[in-house]
Image (cartoon, rainbow, N blue to C red):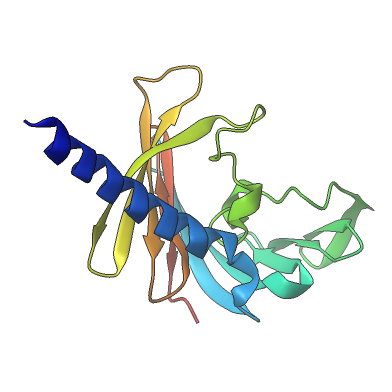
Length: 172
């Protein structure tokens, strides 16, 4: 392979990655997101949760199958409800959300290669309206993951690691 051809491929892959990052950086574009999150653990256990988020207001609710829900309001108060009763209410770091919300609030995801993050982006490939971002584990570079960005939805829709995965379904 010639040096020019390799440079063109790297430039193209970098452009694709930067375009996908621009979508992720525009996370508060959506006034409201309603979706079902399918989480699959490494042992194959699947959990479906209902999510309602208002990214621009930084508020969200996750409703789990056991009727519990978490909520963080813009003032940073986190509330855990179990069968309708509040069991915990406390201030939380407003820059952090549960991993179940990383796709909707991607700036909180530990994928950027920052000192506290577990993953860093290493490349991207676009097919149609989807970009697959390749990530490598910071401490174990041989462990890879993939983040899918849907350009039509203007958000990340899937995150797959060797240990688990999460995917937004029925986005509205």
